[in-house]
Image (cartoon, rainbow, N blue to C red; front, side, top):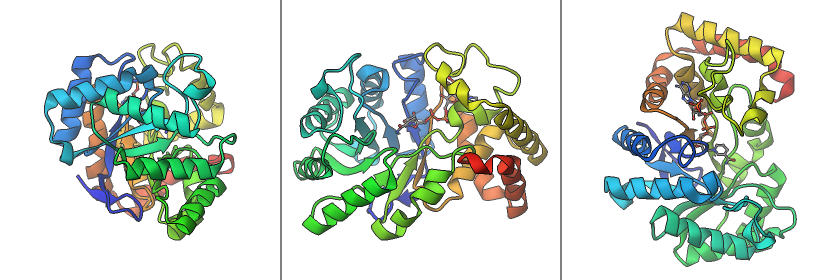
Length: 326
Ligand SMILES: NC(=O)c1ccc[n+]([C@@H]2O[C@H](COP(=O)([O-])OP(=O)(O)OC[C@H]3O[C@@H](n4cnc5c(N)ncnc54)[C@H](OP(=O)(O)O)[C@@H]3O)[C@@H](O)[C@H]2O)c1
């Protein structure tokens, strides 16, 4: 495993990390969840990502139980939660968003579910235009001073809102966000590479990027249709099929062909591509089975082995999409 500091903070995270969205508490049982976390840990992964909204809190319950059951040393791993969407169906106004009340209540609930005394990372899962940025920054600062949270960050915030939070924290000696959690993969590059570009140097922003496989599109498994036993095939995730227009399908076919010529599977190739960006602190992996995770962990070798000519071939597969965010 390789480790990178989370932006300008001192926290060393494994470059590959592991998250529970759409798996734990959904279609992945507790036994497989335990196997996945154990495998991640055995390969040096030290960051496990969660959110209040994942399976309405059940994702965090499974993660907390598994981490406790495996008896992994608390000082050897980091765990996150995120607040914004709430942890119940049809949340009431104070049960969602980024108000001081919800940020505090959601933090306490995540601590209970994850069975920990503190969150290593606490993310604002989306921007909340109805809450003043001062309220968010002072609340996060307070949670850090109370010892409930070590570092805080944002997820899918516009760059100007992140800059506003960082500048405000700096001006008043408060804890600033250390990381953003955006989507980043061969199909979605614009935000990480362009929109956030000024923030890396100016505020030392790190990133824990999500969906490196674009929810599985980059594995090649959808190139001949949608398997029923897959994220796109499952009820509740049909919105993801919007990402499968004709131009993208062609790019994904080209990518699978290039992966074959390079002698690697598409999934680790796509994950290794994310690792090439120095502003990516950690790539959040998702997996439904130990076999998938084992294949994805191979990204470290792919990253070490491929030369620039190979990466140019990979990039060329997606060049026709460059006007649409890729
Ligand atoms: N902050 C946010 O808003 C946000 C949003 C999304 C995710 N996240 C975080 O990022 C983590 C990773 O995101 P993600 O799950 O979307 O990542 P991803 O790598 O894009 O997709 C993972 C899914 O792809 C399929 N898959 C993975 N490896 C495979 C392989 N080798 N072969 C075939 N299929 C494979 C599995 O789904 P199936 O087996 O079901 O097809 C797996 O659950 C999440 O767990 C969460 O912690 C954060």
